[in-house]
Image 1: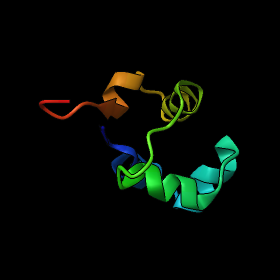
Image 2: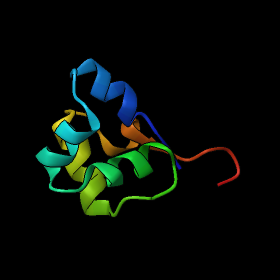
Image 3: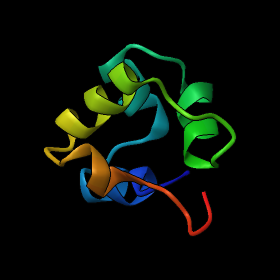
Length: 66
């Protein structure tokens, strides 16, 4: 699963730490999600999408063949 979190963080001028604090997870969790090493729960994905005022499917998407 791919995501646009890094792009959205840049648009909002946020660090990984800023985002992590706002949604209640560790900075390492945000890093792992951005790198595709961790797939967030539905609840976490919704929290991130809501923070960026985007539909979940605009922030997270499947690669071809997934």
